[in-house]
Length: 282
Image (cartoon, rainbow, N blue to C red):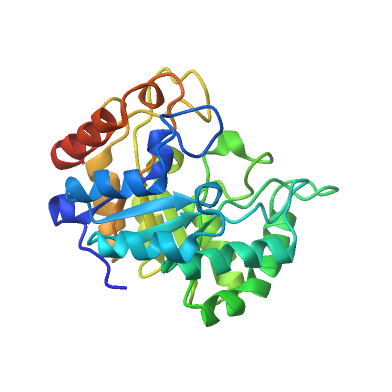
């Protein structure tokens, strides 16, 4: 899959369907994948990132529909948790790899899950994570899928993640030492990190995904109150510059969880606004 140059305006832009509220029950307009694909194609987007819950047994069909519309499936969200009390089985995790392959995407996002029961701190859980991701990395490689470890904002530490910075994710990548294991950089989770520029420099060649939104200064919900680009305090241009210096040439993926605002709006308005913001403030 040829990756788009993020400097190429709208041609470097992908929709993560979470921006329309499709990642959780009871939110959004409930558009089927076909309608999302058509709306994105009409607007000249380069790609779409789906969530597993939308795909079911239709991965190949949906992937073909995206490509027929002139776009790419830029990624799949996400594996089941790999560590913590809610960790999935090896079979469930491999099934998410198989879904990514059937969609025809190279990138499967990994949100790690919380700390392993019985452990303290995060290092032991990170080592367990490395062992478990390492067990599936070869399988994923055989299907043409890369695994993007996504560090989350420290407020999710111990609950949804054991990776709370790009440096955390790079440490685990080093332990795994597999060519198809890298990282995803999400503005919502890293905007606060004053060492991000150096961390991205250390991640050169290993950034597999770049997710954009904004951090609202008075965010009201740590999971479901992200801002549309330009509505918050994240230095979007600086973060993008750091990611580009890491030799990332994939799509900029808009991923806005917004139960109080954007998920209540018409999808057409959300899509048009995200394009305008991407072209003006990112």
